[in-house]
Image 1 (tube, rainbow, N blue to C red):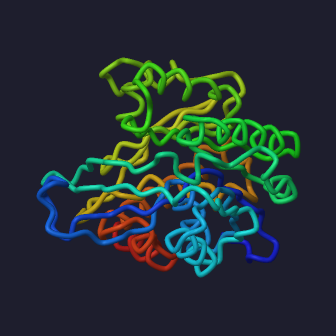
Image 2: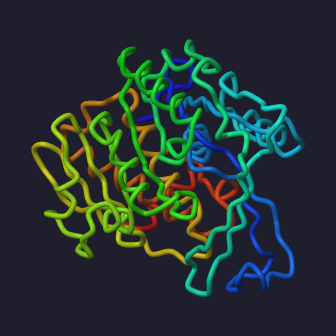
Image 3: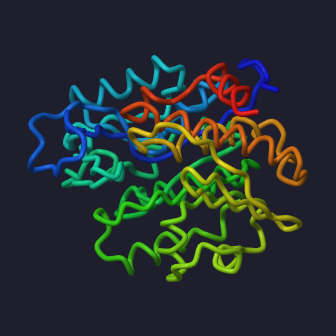
Length: 327
């Protein structure tokens, strides 16, 4: 299936990379944590690394602080084979930090340090346009929409990618504590909705964006727009639902011993983009799309079996082993 790296299409991921500080003990509040481990994160960066782990070709565009953490993060991207030509360093602002605790139920609670952080200060004229134009797929979230100048950089990058013929992939990756209000979050996330060719939302994001507590087809289809090729709703351990112009359905997930859900959605997205970057007509072939989504579900599941996002992102052989074992 996988094309060799040299000739596979480039997937460019745009947005934030930061450090998550995770308590050394699970199931406690942030205030009660006796200590923290630093775990590199940031959804667009996780996606970029998920892609290279699976043998794909990816680049990351974003801004880091010109500090030890920023250089550490850039080093992690490079070490994982992600093209780092789109990374800028800000002299005046720090790399973003987030404190993330895993509650007893495995769900997460966030506290962010961004005042402002370097990723928020990426300017439109700092974008590596050559890199963006080389993308076959351009992937982004919504955190880069929260404040200027990053918002304008995001809008410009999206337009340049679209004009160059890239497929636009959007995972809103809702982080409510970062937004001024839920209303503002909903409006801004929806403000670029109609530009995307592919959108992935979680069940929680679906509820937030539609204002409905039903995870059903009517609710999902209220997010449909005429230029959309594929809409995905991830359902945690229950797999995912998919919607296209011509068909819809659900692909079951995998039962695994989940210890940390961080990065599972990013792993899912990376796997999906890896499979469709050189074969976009997969989105019109239901049988083939189901195979790809099963693979992506397996990637997401494996990612929940270890702590932290990046250390847990699987390689292809791990995914194949889970797929074989589940038959």
